[in-house]
Image (tube, rainbow, N blue to C red):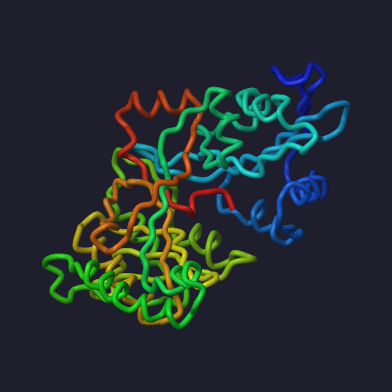
Length: 357
């Protein structure tokens, strides 16, 4: 536990670096004050204590006259970065008390991070921030290195039409030809599949997920660890969300997967990963869409993903890319290091599941 005078921000601003669970009570109270949904201790223990990385999270506090007015947490997570695996610090829980916003406190927190000794073993930091945090990060010199976009696949447009025509029966009648046209437009089938692949939901994860992580060619690429242990923690052991696993196999060998959840008639794709062969990636998406359609309980499939080196054929599988996106930001030193060793924007794979939970 250390404190230090701060660079910029109010003149009396200081900083406190705290580990978990030492500062758990203060952190939970502060986070719940600044978020619309309160979380209990079990949720924070899952995030901080069960996360599969040898380095542990730390929280950096901004203090004014000993009052905790701002905070952020750095969650170490293992990434493959170009040539090997390194721990990367994923930023989360970035908060400033409402009455202290606009005073440069968030920016001062970001500028203070390089002084934190506990973060020196990290290869760098990464954050997928909201709009307000993104502006503060950019003013502090952070660089947008990727964009995680939103893609939609409409299975049934009647709920959207009903919001316009205000009549459920009329919306269903109008939706029929539009739904049929959408299905025809997305009837692409990957070439040369010849029945090689089988898709279906798995009840749990097995050693094939470790094998898939090893097999995917990651040379010169940047992608968060997606082995069995991490995926089990991030998705299947999530304390507040229920995720399902759609897997694509070839003769029982795992070729790719999609992690998804359901809420309010929408199927949310939180993560997708597969070997680079187009027949595999195409079949993963096409068979997943067919599976979701056959359940009959979803009107829309929504996915968040960057323009990944995996080149998943979202458009040909019937997805439409929306104009909104979430930027992925890194400190300037990491951006320069990655670019200097040949890793540009096309080297990344990021999905909604890479954002801090």
